[in-house]
Amino acid sequence: MTQSGGYVYLDTTANIKARIDSQAYTRRILNNVTIERQLTSLDFKVNILNKSNILTITYEAEKEDIDSGIVILGNLVDELRRDYDKDIQLKKDEFNRQIFMKNNQMAELNLQKKDLEKQIQAKEKSISDKYAQIEHHKASLKAYDYRIDNLLGELKSIKEKSQDILMDGGELSGGQQTQQKNGQSDILYPAAIQQGMSLFQELRNQINDLRIEKEFSRTSITALENDINDLTWDIERIKKEKTLAIQTDIDTLQTEIDKLKNRVNHIQGIKMISEPVSSVYPIKPKVRSMMILSLIAGIFFSVFAAFFIEYISNIRKRSEQE
Image 1 (cartoon, rainbow, N blue to C red):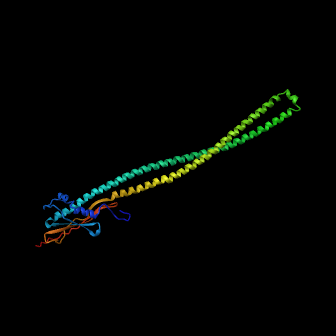
Image 2: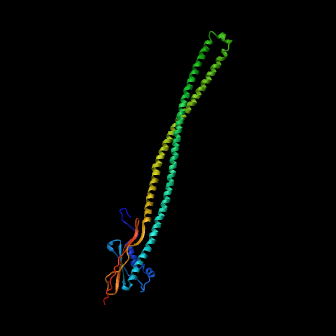
Image 3: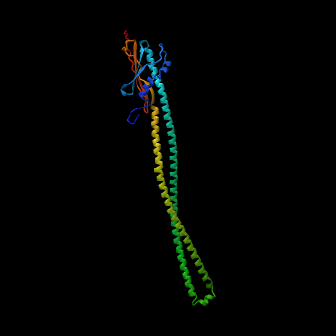
């Protein structure tokens, strides 16, 4: 069925008429039916009514052959149905093949989608890990600042003590010089100065090392923040460019599959609406009667794929005219 609600036909009334007119069914029908009169051809008259999808088929027979004529018309319908049932089955097979292929495509797309979702999850975990590393570095910065402040305090204290020792040493070299010559101060004074200088240098080295570590943490935080920005951008790109595109393809395939399944479920073959009868009026001076078969021709698919067959036969009384 089209979007406007019209039917889509598998064949046209013109093609069906051409099949019948070509005597394509004559041999098959004669092989199927048993009639007393020996026939070599079947003269079906096929007309298309008002350019519609309706075919009117008439068949003339002697009065005594009316029953056989009705059987012949019925067999014609059976043969038409048999032919188009094959076409319908082929169409169903084609639809099912398309459904199978589209299901495979959709399965592949779903795998790609799951893979992208895993990539996104991995990137999101990486972002979370990097935020944790940033917090660790920030905590380290605070610890470095605290330790550096303490070391600077110790450094200041050592410097002040060293200055005091130097001052004490100057005083000792004055009025009390003779007294200290025999004491221990002349030994302790250089040692205290040396120890102070050594500790002072050690503290300076520690402060320098901490400042290097502090700068490393700052640089690491900047690098981690840049990584987070890159990962966030990459996640958004995957979601927009890949995941959404794949989902659009999946939705499109699902719509196509649903349409194909709908077509398969609604394809139908020929349906006989009423039995044929013969006319009630003579058509010739001879003892002949005419049987009329009308059918809505065309095999259509999508929502329906069917022949609507209607036999219209009016039995005519025999009128012999010499």
